[in-house]
Image (cartoon, rainbow, N blue to C red; front, top):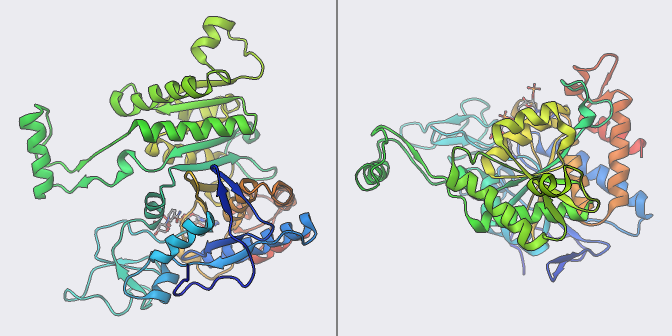
Length: 448
Ligand code: NAP
């Protein structure tokens, strides 16, 4: 397949998928999206750190052939016409199977246009597109759009959002024993209230649905309501829980916890829990034990070699990860719970600047920084690149290049515990040295 505006690297091979397993050549082509705002700053450093680790870990035998693809501001510059998620970007990811991205601007809503340089949302002038941004003066203004991040996940069917959350020695934390939290959140990515089925208050569609609910279904709904729909399916729930259990098996982890709000939303959240248990028993019956069985048959003593499958109600889980974090390992949960919970966990161990993430489907994996574009810091070489670097670490582990992944993790931890950090950590540590994004990356490489 020939691309129109993407320049493929001169060397490099495609990653192949056989029987659902990825085969990684020594010089795989990996597409990357720099991202908007601080994206280019943190991407430059991330690439340098990954390349240095791979070079050192394999003495030059392995090397990633990076291929830039475009979304957000870089796509608008390259493709024009409000084309901020070009079809060939999606094709490149489909074809190469593994990709990595920086953050992308997402309008909150209510305005007709958004500036992709400073993220300022604004209305048209006399019904026309503003020529220049009213805040930063840039010409890169595009029509309001739905989240590109959500779009990428949905179009590519990346149904599992995976966020490992652990503490790195030296990172300032608001809790007393941050080292006790070491979880990996598997958040369902395609359903729930994020499915995009929403109707604005007062519109004919909202009125139609409200009338149906009141008159046909005999439900009570206020006439002046906006409506959102929360679909949760057997398919979506089971494939997510399967990914979580597979991960626990592969990594030898002790438990998988299904987090839901089934006490209130029985046929969506409660069903997620029931289908999760059903799948665990049907497909992994020999390898797992439920909490019920643990108490009924083993008097609470965990038999060796089994994974404990348990469930917790979402509100109670927020308490659990603060008070008894070491009782949790893999967490599987619907979309909205997962969104809240992964940020709350990340806050315990140093905040979003350090939290990595990935969106994974059956064949494709897209690794990404979990924070946003922090537009006020664009181009200042200031922010913490750790989230994207650690997403790179996740990517290397996914590729089976564990030696290089561990090299980065160890060096990053050493850099932070030496108190050589970016502004966000420096302001929370006493006696720390404040480094620029690029200097922090160089220190990590020095510490490898
Ligand atoms: P944000 O970009 O995450 O930034 C909020 C604050 O978090 C920053 O002002 C900064 O705090 C801190 N921060 C974020 N990244 C950091 C880093 N790498 N190092 C150090 N500190 C960091 O959130 P936002 O301002 O709400 O969102 C801006 C835009 O990003 C919006 O368009 C939003 O929709 C989008 N967004 C994209 C993604 C994504 O692409 N995955 C995710 C979330 C948001 P201080 O001000 O305290 O220094």
